[in-house]
Image: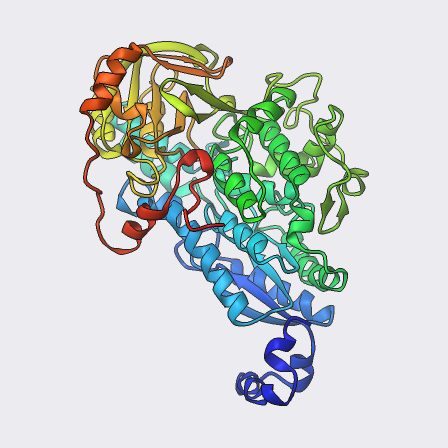
Length: 554
């Protein structure tokens, strides 16, 4: 066993003595030692219940003959970090999480890992670590939150964010917003729509690193606790078979995940995270691959913010496995790909769509192509990404006047101040991985636009990124970013910008000669943060088009 490095032989008597100081018996030490990575904390509603999930995992490990050894991982709540300097640390925390799991697992050579994330950057950070370490591993998320109810209608966190804009524009009273605030998030779990957390938990299931149900079984459902026990038992089987993450998360598995992502209409953040996860396995996911698969995969689901359904509806309709079963009819799912519970085809054998109003048939999709689109052009030579499924038909193709802001804060002030008009194209720059630093999510401005009734008439472009809860013609990850001298740094107030999402094109309507002049006159601004973790992060981080991985990665 891998753990023999720290427990077997005469030379390891001191090591065993330290285990015994914590109450471990000789029998427990002799068994496979399983690292249980618990990301519980008291700041993320998706993690507040993870002690319970972890206890079920540990029970499963013991039932199967292993010894669980729990250790923690950090996590940032994107919703609480939103709209202030805290959001600069969100994406950057992904690397810290991956590194900390690596440190703990190499420092203490466990035989296998059960990783327990639930929200935004914690999931990809742990996935990156699992593929980097490549020891038997399985994931069990904490599960999604129920949608809230207000006067019989479903509401959620995004409803509250959009309510802020509604209050600012006089469409809602402060009292009504307080009423919404009190009921939108009714309990534990990852926020209830197809936002980044739930998208990534679904991606983990589609990749094959979590059991069927990992993405959609509700946090408050006892089935989640049973699934956690099953994950704890399953890790011993994976160790016995020596089935490791890179055996499962192959290129075929990533293609499966991208197809599911397009069918679901998942968060644009997957375009950052899936390439970063693949990078750890030595697999390059070119952005064009998302388009290639997206053109072949119809959009079958419109969950919040794209539609009225929530993850609880997806779960009742058959979950991720049902989506995979439906799109497998088009040949976009590799049934031979392995998962922690066997080949994909075996898992899909009994899968079924129970509600075609939630998971549409491939014969009746919302659109013949997928929910995500990679956009390129002279404004984004390396690409940008848009959640196509959350864009109104009128905004799929549009042209407007550039309104340029060098920070999210300035843009929000202009939106809230009534300075943005229908037909404007908001450009928010110097918010990329290096320029932010940290590539902030722009949920506040997109929600403000929606709440003020401008989501169907104003586009928003940024070298930053968007929340999975953002809707409208919001194109993020524009690369190269402004801080690197990308074309987005050269846009001036009043320039015309043309957007054609169906054709995957974005054009700054300025001549090449004029752009050359502007580039010659451009000077890189001083870093916004010049000390601490973010300063080091900014010096190492790469483009959003490469998943914002760090330069020191092999």
